[in-house]
Length: 407
Image (cartoon, rainbow, N blue to C red; front, side, top):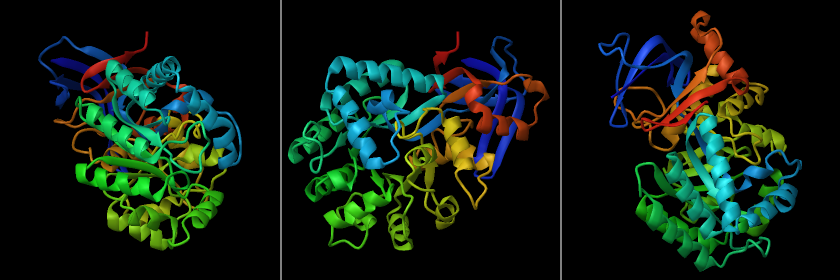
């Protein structure tokens, strides 16, 4: 049994955080066995100089774009054509794909992110390598090969049946191969996916209860193009609904420009929305209607969306979620929740991860805080959300295993 002494900051709800200073966490068989103020065994790992938080959860990130984060273009389509698509092509080379994956997962662990939902490039082997690397590094990951069979650069364009069958093959090989790995079907977004492909994905994923991820209403030009390409549908969201890719395990990236009818579809199908504030700001896509989505009852969470987002740090994402609202104040409690327990809820894993509770798997991050003994809960939380990029992750644990320790 592993015993750790630390100071716990734990999300309870979107407006409540619990602080437990000078507390012992015992870990056994990957799970949190106890949380207490005293222990009989004096042999423990001492992280008293740090705050312990649940492992952070990034619900939308592009592994194959990791090296082009911060490469500026203020228009989504120009950015895709000139920055993103050429970079994803490089992952056709297995050596390059492996190097990107290794650097990406190393950076995640150093950032305290223990769970991530990942798009790779549209190459089967690149996705396979991402899974191999995730398994080697001991992280919790839901990974999918990006799918695009129309209106795409020739060098990324897939044959419809091949795109589908390769994804099925990857699903059958990797989904739940270990307790930490799952597959997510990943049609990039409607403009580059045929109706046939999306329908095939929907039928298979619903049958197998598999995850689906895609992008929705990120950009006004994107919405105009979708209306032109799919004229028989009333709105963008209805395309996904009618083709069968919405449901409780569907993750919809962005969702900035949704009307009330679209929100009703998302709520009715129990689909989830993934808010990417840093990416939205970087690409000038618009302001996420945080308060409206929250009041709608739709589950949502925060994500980095690297490389549209500029950093894998979920502390940066929390800060940007607060900064990017003009008429609504996102509290530190809310930002923290949607990067931890809220993310777990979106993935239907809130009984397993997302908070520090007895019986949950020990996905933990330890953040070193200067002069921590003189800090109150409110100050600690504020420091994490707004100054998290300046703080150092001392250690990261996934399912009770130390996967990163700052030397």
